[in-house]
Length: 350
Image 1 (tube, rainbow, N blue to C red):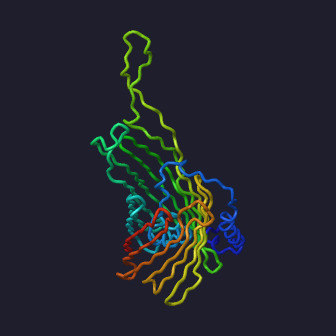
Image 2: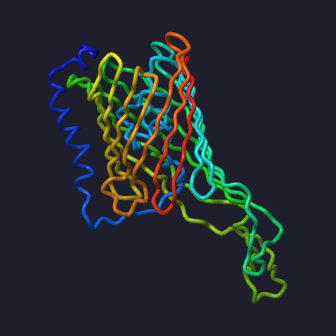
Image 3: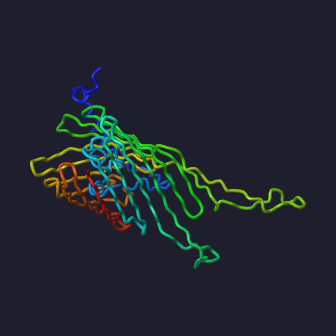
């Protein structure tokens, strides 16, 4: 059995057409009466997109996945990276919330490519207010989330690669917290049709999360009718368990223009979440000598209740050698009535 021959088999071509139909059909099949299930999963910060480059392309990145942000979008892309890469991202998120991401990929040759990433969301300190003290009690609390992940990926043939993320997720608010574990699996396949790529990724398949902590502590009298009963017996309220925001993404990407100095890449992703309706993301990236980049995209097509829409951005890359460079990217995203979000990311290739 010749594994390396799989990528060059002409028999694979019908799957190319099938994947294209699936990417478009997932979004086109959304009925007008679809009801979303927003706020029915925990750890919503896991759905915040990573990387100014990917966001500038409308989040249509599962089949592109050719920089270190593939750790988020599709770990099946990290074995394709031509060099090691460190990426850092800062996002001024909605309602004065800050979101930061850092990721590192290292190519270990025949063993494959390994990676690590950390994403944090922080809301800053807020004053505790109650019905009795609406102006504040003098106490302050904060809320924040983080996810730490380790990744591994490998090219199984010259055209097919696979990757995995293993995640630890933590959320906290005041004196309550919840933790969970999850994994992602992604694949990337390069077809013989003008080197078009097909990517698929399942993200956040894992445990349910349940808030626990001091704020759930109460005092209870088990038998108030009994003489000498104790009304200071500590008990804890049991909160509900909530699933993680499971995402299935499938997409296609292809260079629709490539010359010695210019490249235009088009991408389309179909997204199926477990807490919302299906939608489609589309994007374009124009590159001039792989030094100057312009991007435009649109998020959440066919989701009539989404506030997301137009995205745009750009970037520059400065070469430091044959396989080294620095890349700075910016992205703008329109959130309708929720204003706009700006992202900045810095990548070091070495």
